Amino acid sequence: MLRIVCIALLLSLTACGLADTATTAAAGGAAKAQEVQQAKETQEKLQGQLEQAGRQGQERVDAAEREAR
Image (cartoon, rainbow, N blue to C red):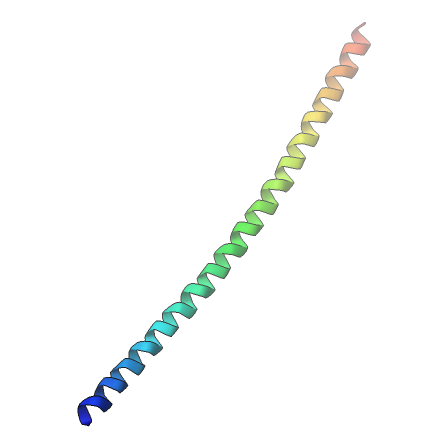
């Protein structure tokens, strides 16, 4: 009987450790997912800024070519 109680206690303690590990992993995963989302948003913002700068540069080239004629 004592052996069964000891085994049950050991299993419950092990389960608590696994639950803590799973909780920590889930929290870490959520933080990484948020970092990825922020990185995507930053990338999209920078891509838009680069495209706008490219358009402005082309407009300046076009204007300079028109003035040169």
